[in-house]
Length: 76
Image 1 (cartoon, one colour):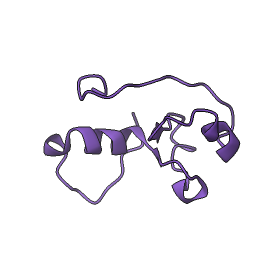
Image 2 (tube, one colour):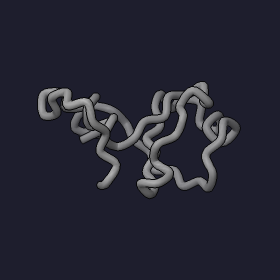
Image 3 (cartoon, one colour):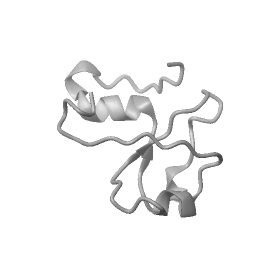
Image 4 (tube, helix red, strand yellow):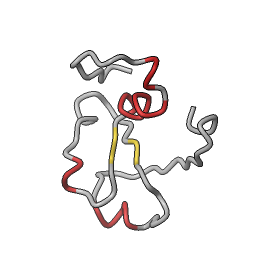
């Protein structure tokens, strides 16, 4: 879906997410955090680069398929 939308994507494997790790790739505009459902909700306010969940990414790429429902899906 990311490639079909005309964007580039990279897969990066890191341990605990922190600001210095995110700054290692300065050309990245958005990080999508994929992890277990207990840790997938993080406070993106801690980071200078936006961090989203897979569900938030899909909402951004295909908004017509996901009408607003006032709920967050964390079980992928």
